[in-house]
Image: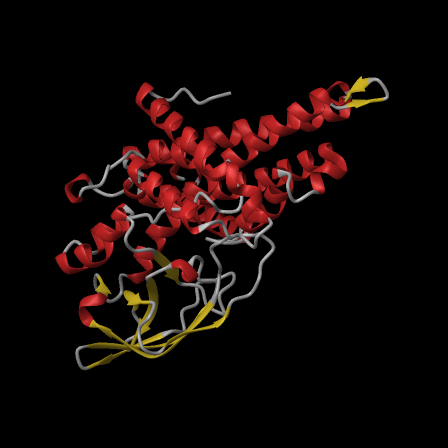
Length: 386
């Protein structure tokens, strides 16, 4: 049930699959049973191999040393990376194309922050969400002008991977109410982690809350112009929504494959579980939904590569993220049920996926947010223009 990718895309996808199966999946249970922690030398090897493969610079422009890959190729990689639990696939930083566009007029920013992302010598995190964020974008963090730059004060919640990061992409409001994006070093004076709660999944990457208390940020660390912050954040959201959807394809594929293998050898009163009609219906629904999601994901990627209208792309990214994440949650529920009690064991991948894919319906815009984006696009542009 593969998409008919080009030969080069299939070759690339096979290389990533090999990396996933050899370097990442063997360490899932170790991570799960040790609060997400694996030996440091293993973690470092994962990052080295990921960077050697080119995963950290898939989206970076070729003129800056990146691979400038098509979105189809990038999502083919993320589909394979989605087969891994415990966020072990987040073993590399990611320099995205929009970052270079935003920093196009600052050689300092490219050399200081973006090149090290591609090389793996620095890690990034995104400080965007706030306590009041929910169905609407809310930014209460202030960036007040001061001599030489800005003084930033506020709180940021759910700053994913911040415990492993060297700097933030931080969104704040300037004195005139404009959205702006900044590079902020995580060890800057006035930055403090005030909470690091445990979540349902067992990831080495945490989601802490940070307080910014009159943190000085030099003007050269402002990304682009004042007022452009939300545009950059939307570029990030589009990218993240596509890659999340691609990861859901990989997660669902692995769950279906392992559930099918289990049902094919599990006997109940002399009959194989796979021969039970209820089992067949459950797997058939899962495969059908996975196929539909694949078609959506790669068509949205192709639209990106064609340079289709940006507003249409924005709505399509929301549709893809909505459908693929909800599909993966339904697949996880069905497949865990087929495993029975064995499916509820933490050393079973389906149990980990069952917990892990749940958050994909929430972060980078919840399912409800995606429905609002889609409905607003329909109202403003009509069905043919979406």
